[in-house]
Length: 310
Image (cartoon, helix red, strand yellow):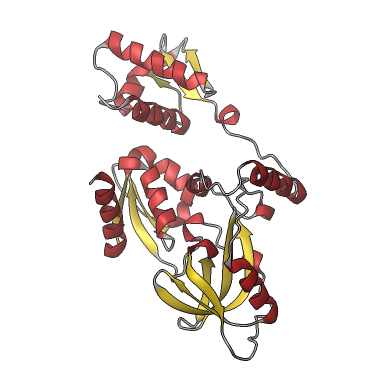
């Protein structure tokens, strides 16, 4: 028997994803072996689960079929229109006001940041999920001055020395980012400022030229699994099992599909340049996701899981 929290989660996902209402027999079959085999015990467990979901506001609908092959059966589904929050249609000023309110009541809190990534929190002017963490970072005054003066800076990031022409700063979902040209890599890179190790130093030399068309608001990818990445774009091959394949396709888009298997599972190419965000995404699919390639990304996921259970 599965843990009840896991069973409730799987029941919620199943009723959200089903194209047609399901009977208890079909639900138990889809979630086998999470419900008991005995009819009375299965019914009792399901009724408890249904009541628990309804108590937290999940609109589980049911109907008794009066005709056809399902006559007499009670079938269940979730009304997505009632379950999912409609677009609040806030303008930019209203969203900023909410961010300020959040910052005032939860200063410095990073709780739920990875959950917001999972929900697709994006740029403020793209109807983003509201998250506000107003950080007080020692590096910000130096970086702001360097951006204004067009002076290169140097710092340690992920144990490597970086020399960067700071093109601009951007507050994204409560975190400050530096966007600029990395001298060693000869390419644009994005750095999350709270992850800079030690002090930021200015570098002597003539002012750099910033690209005329540079706009920091366009410096981030739409996909949250690429946010904060300071490496070249990388995709990972991920196999999603049949029970979550439709959900993954809706989230990633059909253009990310590499192969559909006969059993209903799907292989996707998924951005993984930002390893923490990618790992969070994979773990959100529990046992229904398997990283197939490349080897180093798969090894990273395996090593993290092993360390978590050791």
